[in-house]
Image 1: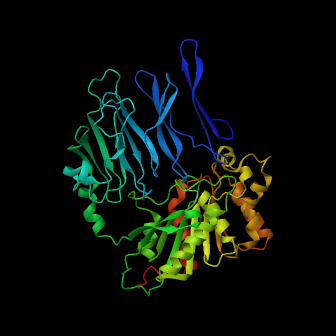
Image 2 (image 1 turned 60 degrees about the vertical axis):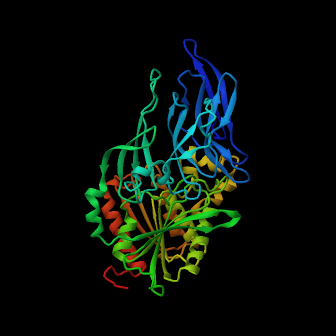
Length: 473
């Protein structure tokens, strides 16, 4: 990978002289970059390999798919395709000519499924070369265990590497359901996918306890964005919410990430602070994946632009269509890049967010990870204007007083403490009042003071949004 991260070269080197020959090169589209992918998976004879690469799908954006490279013929074949992302190559069964991989769903990027596809070396005309999703419709391949995997749409799997001397190929694999229901895992036969052994089942251990808790109800859907993009939105509706209470006014808390290539809206099971806030404080908790997230285009040469505007666009759409959201009590928060987006949103002269919490925010991109920053914004010497426009301190004077709570650890090496210090300095120069909490000896994740940090955030939001955890709507 070169420094601009728009060219990746794979070379084949042989012992003992270690003479290297370039076997494959990937070049990014104009004003874009290449993601760093895992190492290629080689065939046992060393004459071909599989790798993940960005592939254009029609007139749409590029999606990560699997390429098969044959060294002797210098031939490249794309063996998966579609408007979904391949997230991991699990195993290459050379004997049976099958490639197993994990990927998203074409219509639901928050899901993860197990797929299998025939490799190009197969000479079986009967077997389809189209990728087959083993877990998308349990009635097809996992019919005998579909009840076992009820309420499962986020899967992972484990497959042993195939030894070169193995004559049978892959015989078994472990399939793990990670959500949205409680996690469970089982062993399956590779031939007919029948389940042969249950490894663990958290439903048997925790389901009765969870049923006694007043947990929020998740709702996931899409919201239209400019240029034919669609935001992925997840609402956590508080336990007191009812369909008939459409005139009730619930406070809103929006969690933002927005980091290029990330995914916040998934169907993986978790017990999060968002669920706690929704359950205890009757808050409608919202998570968003907008432009720039995985499968939603790339924010080339610009940060703090469309991903910030999309947060406001989606919120406006929700307020217009969901009458139970209280327009006067809306807050936003984020961590790291999400803290940066939070600060940019508050400084965008919007009229929706009453307050925000920025944890370990990035303020000046000149002092952030060079590999990430140069990938998106280019070299500072060549794109000074882009760096200045992405600097959150340029919007400090537009952030309303008493609307921002800054939290940062002094030992943060991901987004160094200098970011919050410089942002606080610019806020003070502009006469903007704000709240500040620093934690000594704490890194980016605030691991040693998480409970204290979350309690302080809850207290701040209780004041900002006029929350009453004992209130019955």
